[in-house]
Length: 174
Ligand code: RP5
Image 1 (cartoon, rainbow, N blue to C red):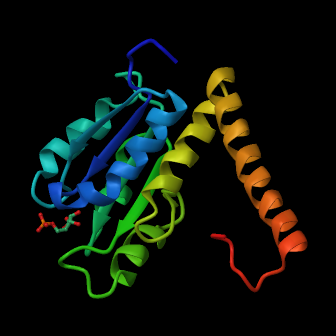
Image 2: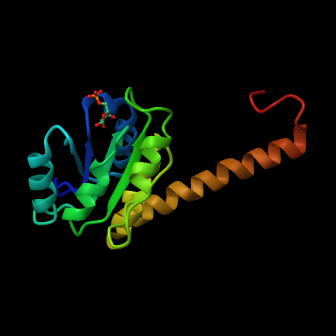
């Protein structure tokens, strides 16, 4: 993609989420998919959250990745306002008990307002899922995701062959 129009929004509740959420930006960059990244807090900037989600589709965005920790209401609240798909990234943050709080806050949505929830801190997978959604209607993005997955397969098959030839005793770093 080369339009400079962001197709994916990466939003997070706090700048303290950035070390986790930047993995989504990194993989989207690798796929050549335009994104924007900003802070939108459900609790500290509720009016900004409502405005951001309300106009996201009209601004040309196609997918929203929302990361939050603790009482992680951002992804669900954004999903309640927009008709775009929302991918939630639960983050183990400073106000998390153990991460389950974030996972369950994002995962256990009521019927009618789904959030596609990835694993704890799995912002990279959120980026890949966003690229997969874009790839459903954009051939270039779809090909990039396909190649990415083929490379994963090749990597594993190479390890299978190495294991077969050299045995497991010396590990994989030999
Ligand atoms: C959540 O509270 C944010 O998403 C973040 O994960 C957590 C802690 O935020 P800070 O106190 O570090 O700003 O809303």
